[in-house]
Amino acid sequence: MSKKYKGKRCVYCQDNPSINQGDHVFARGLFLEIERHNPIKVPACDECNNKKSSIEHYLASFGGRHSGAEETLNSLVPTRLKKKS
Ligand SMILES: [Zn+2]
Image 1: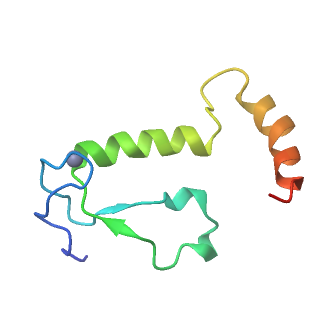
Image 2 (image 1 turned 90 degrees about the vertical axis):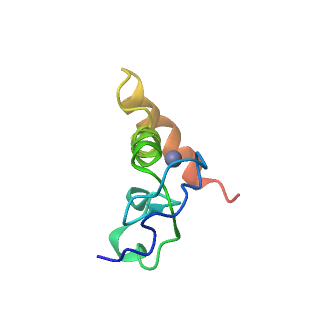
């Protein structure tokens, strides 16, 4: 495993040292596996990486923890995907 980011300053809190593998700026979970090559990464500490990961999961699941998440996904997303811009 690369230690490219180890010990560098976290870009989010600008305080703590980075974890070894860094953070994917755009969550890998937002892309198909075949589109996950060469992702942009930055130094990030464990605490910031974990907080960001939680937010990314919430975003990727359309707030999957609330009762209307599935309906939101099924009713709004197809309409949005049909729009050209
Ligand atoms: Zn941090």
